[in-house]
Amino acid sequence: MERRDFLRTGVLGSAVMGTGLLAHPARAADIPTRFERGVELAADLSKDETFWRDRRREFAPAPDFINLEYGYFCPAPLPVLQAEQKGSSEINARASYFMRREMRDELEATRSDLAEFAGVSPDEICITRNTTESMNIIIQGLDLEEGDEIVYSDQDYGSMVEALRQKQERFGVVLKQVSIPLHPKSDDDVVAAFEAGISPRTKALHVTHMVNLTGHILPVRKICDMAHAKGVEVIVDSAHAFAHVDYKVSDLNCDYLGTSLHKWLCSPVGLGMLYVKKDKIAKLWGLMGDTARDDDDIRKLERLGTRPYNHHRGLREAIRYHDAIGSAEKYERLRFLNTYWTSHFRDHDRVVLKTPEDPARHGAIANVGIRGSDAKSLGEFLYDRYSILTAPIQSHPVASGVRITPGLPTPLRHLDRLVEAIDAAAKVL
Image (cartoon, rainbow, N blue to C red; front, side, top):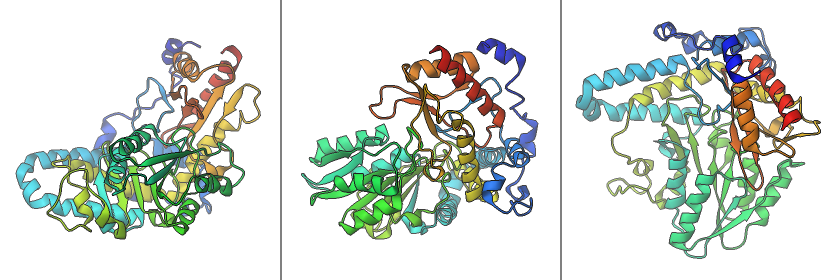
């Protein structure tokens, strides 16, 4: 079926809930727990389509395509969107009064809520604009000398690799790339890959928590424990794992971490978090000059000038919304959405999956390809023929393929459509 015919028939279904719902969005307090629904295990709730249908009604996706690219950012649910919009109106009305008399208290309230959610101290986090900013504060702020080494992997996010290369060009640090397996047999395979890159000159490991290319979840805690035993610090890029995988930052035992809150926490766009372990703050330089604060004050890293603080209203509501669903429940649902469609192709003769099958090693994200075809062609086929938006990853030396990322608003019929489309692509590409 051609895309224009698909749209005309309305197979996408009624996705947009209408602006009327914005006036009365569901509140986080109205979301029933799995126990209230008589469900004992989070994994069982992941298959309760009535529960997740109700959650879909709290979003308002566009109806003219199937979005399976929730990895870029996850749209805010309507309660979050309303909190942000209401905050924008109130702050606009109060103007400088808000900035001079109320803003700091509100910022600290947001910091406190986010820190509790992350399982760390408010004195260890900054609210930034995204993962890239958070990670650059860490990478550029590390006080390293010429010849000091940073170990990173062949599947790290491109912007972070660029930041590492700039560090190399400016300060003469040495970068050592290691290869991590796409389908490890055990955590030890991954830990050993990083360990092999460490030498007496190694000062830090750069580790991606959930690989953006494939959705592979790395055993970060084990990597951190190994590195610390050798006197090496660990920087964690948790852009896709935070509020996706069921964990607290404190569980990882890492030294530094950056993430985006507009990805899996579903906050307003333009929010990130930087974590620095308390005893590491003093030696980290900020991207923006701040000499007024004490060296060990995390706020010295947060000097970004005037920002849209209405986003913080939405962020606090996003935390409440996430907590109302439950971290374990959300994680199980996202894993289920992955397995629902990938299980059709694990033994296919032409379809290649570069995401581990082990459910402990993936969440929602998966990477798929067709033998003999390229990612660009498959991505175009999925969109032009089936109105499915994806993220083609072209010419990556390890993980070329099309990234498929369902989200909380994704109904199973969209994944059924994806299976149909990939089956068709495997016959013609």
